[in-house]
Amino acid sequence: MFVLTKKIKIFSLTLIILGLLGIAFGFYSAPSTIEEAKEIIANSHHGDDHASNHDYPGEANSSMIESNKEHNSEHSEGHEMSHDEHVFHQLANRPWAAVYVAAFFFFMISLGTLAFYAIQRAAQAGWSPLLFRVMEGITGYLLPGGIIVLVILLLSALHFNHLFIWMDPEVVEHDKIIKAKSGYLNVPFFLARGVFYLAGWSLYRYFSRKFSIAQDNSNDISNHVKNFKLSAGFLAFFIVTESMMSWDWIMSIDPHWFSTLFGWYVFASMVVSAITVIAIMIIFLKSLGYLEKVNHNHLHDLAKFMFGFSVFWAYLWFSQFMLIWYANIPEEVTYFITRLEDYQIPFFGMLVMNFILPFLILINSDFKRLNWIIITAGIIILVGHYMDVFNMIMPSAVGDQWSFGVPELGSVMFFAGLFIYIVFDSLTKAPLEATGDPLNKESEKFVY
Picture 1 (cartoon, helix red, strand yellow):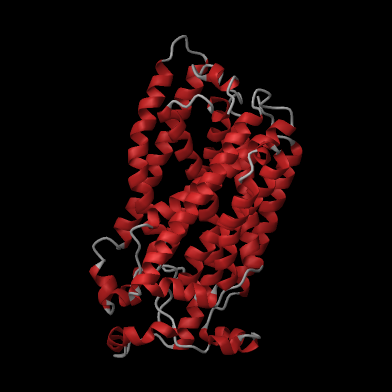
Picture 2: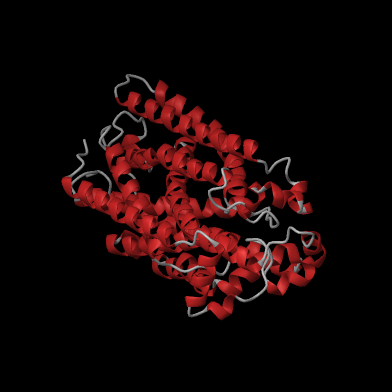
């Protein structure tokens, strides 16, 4: 049995406390009035750069304004948001967006692990049973992490922030595009879908872990068979709900833009992040003397998945970018124009960290067996995919009023500490080896 050490507790609680202080500072320093926002901009060294034309968060920037003249003219009848009010909403959104990015990032690691775990169960993979309890521990964050995300969405629906502009009835009333989507994008249905997604994922996690632990003390493989059937059914449920979750929780922040590839894109990001965390967790646990039967063959396979899904993510990123950019449809291409103009460092930085560096580091087969190489590549991948989530959410939520400072760092620290504590606490609830799994012996003898 794994024992939660005092060092892990202190480290995780320290991150939580420091993170809370950073988050509190972010909300304290955010403007509460338009006048405060104007003062912040006036004191900013790049205030002149913000004097460009913008409409609502997530809509086209100055290079796309011409294509939206007809739409904007409808707002001129007493409803069009002034530039000062718009900038105020962007600055006020920043601490909320920082918290939301970090909350979603750590939640998606747990959800990606659940999907990877279900794939192993449904495929009856022989190499991975020794890793099951680590995966189950990581998915322990799924429910609390998901509840936090839902609370943020609820607070958005109650107008504590302006992350989702379609939640503003006045915006919907004067916006033909958003109004046409109101049958799907309305608060009651939106929140109900979120509860439905999380309930389905959490129920699978509960019953699958229950069968997994019961199999340890069983004289037959009935619980293993139940897990196989349950996992196969769950994957069908997951692939639909994960795509819908991506549309709801991320893509709808910019309700004028859409991509039919977006669900797969988010899936690739969450799975490669999840596999990376699994590998790092296993290396750490082995350094403490646990998981003695897990060897470099298992880590080599995890590193192969890290490499493969990094390439898969790059393929999806390029497919989405190339098709949208080549078609040059204003409603679609504005998504990338905003990021290329205002988010150059995180936009191109994530390409380097999510594809180029993992590709160069992990392409060598021998490197996949070296712990320090896997950890180095893993840290790069995790930072890169945090930047990916940052790029997906921030431009639509705060426009060009972004930076990476205390609110963002505090949010990452808080959710990292919470994630570490919950995951390691989950590992104490059951033996780290699924001894009753019928494929356990095959996993012990696995050679890549």
